[in-house]
Structures are given as structure tokens and as C-alpha cells.
Length: 236
Image 1 (cartoon, rainbow, N blue to C red):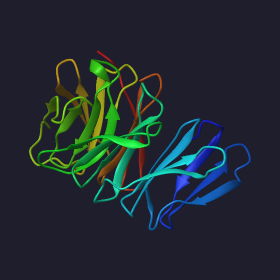
Image 2: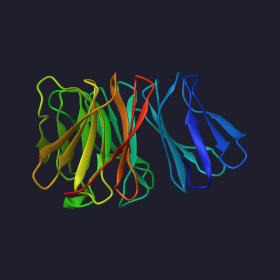
Image 3: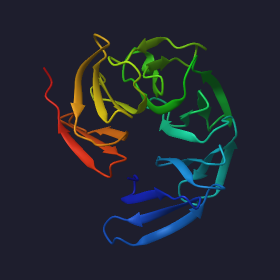
């Protein structure tokens, strides 16, 4: 959902297409990558995309001209995230085990983190504790990253063995993390205790996307079973 009342969609043909919410018609389209678009984010200043060509590209929000291209990744970016403190900074995670932070204003990659073991599948960000970037990975761990340190600054282990996480998002209050897994489950973690407080069962295939509602009273998950589930969340 874009900032100007539009919906931007990435396609397997490498295009992103923008649709009007009110009229339901396509407004414009832009060819962004060789191969499919794998990740997409938008701000009032730019659109950032990741593709099957393993690149991350920045586009001007209004003219849609190419601003910058980065080729740090060796596999397609799985997720992109615009920093919640600096709007010109973007983070990308990929199954090549890399989490890269870019600064569009400086036109360079600020730092390239690498997970010790497994592939990165989801990216989010804390709202406290130096606003660390949070990643989910296929080894079932949630890692925390600071731009000033090469190694992870923290780790939360999955309560179940062999869990492969596919997505994650920090709650609006900053206290909780929701993470979806290939074992069809949705896990809720409390950042104060760094423990899993709930395992949610409802999907019949891998959970690939999760989002919190702005009031933190619902969690929305999407899975490979073709279902979208809305979960009620009651804070203790």
C-alpha cells in the first residue's frame, strides 16, 4: 500500500504495476528487474525493489527514474525494509545469508552483515534498543543487528527444533515479534523476556508473510495454502 493512495505490485515478469485504490485501474507500470520482483517497498521519496537478478534498485517516487543499483547479494533479496529512523536508509535480507544496509543519500552500502549459519528470509526493526534490525532465518533463529557491529548483538531461539522461519515483524509497541514458519505455525515472542509466548495453529502450509495491525490488536498472516488469517492479539 503506497503513501499516495495506490497499491504497488511486483510481478514475475520484472515489472511493478501501480493501481488506484479508488478507481481500481492501473496507473502506471515500470520494468525494474531481469526476472521476477521478489521484494518491494515505497516511501514518499523513492521506491525500492529487489529482484531475481539479485540486485536492489532505487527509483524516484514521482518520475520513476532509476536512482541507484546495488549488487551486494548473491541470491534474490527476500525482504526489504525502510529504516524507521533514517528515511534514506534501507535494509535488505537474502537467502545468501547477507543482510545489507544502504544509504541512498550517500549512494553506497553502509554495512554488509552475514549470518553465521543460515539464510535470511525476513527483515524487521526494533523500536527501542538502538533500533536494531531484526532478521528471521531458516535455522529458526531471530537475530538482532546493529550498524556499528559486524556480528549479531542478540539472538532468540525457536521453541521447536528444526523450525524454518519465513517472515517476521516487530509489533507497533516494539515489545513483541510475530514470526511465520514452514511448519505452518505463527510464533509470538516477547522481547522483554526473549521467550515464545504463543504458537498459533491455523494454516495448512508455510507462513510466508506476517503483519501487525496499527493498534496491535490483530495479526495478519498469509501462507502457501492460499489463506490469509486474521488473529486477535490480547496483551497480558
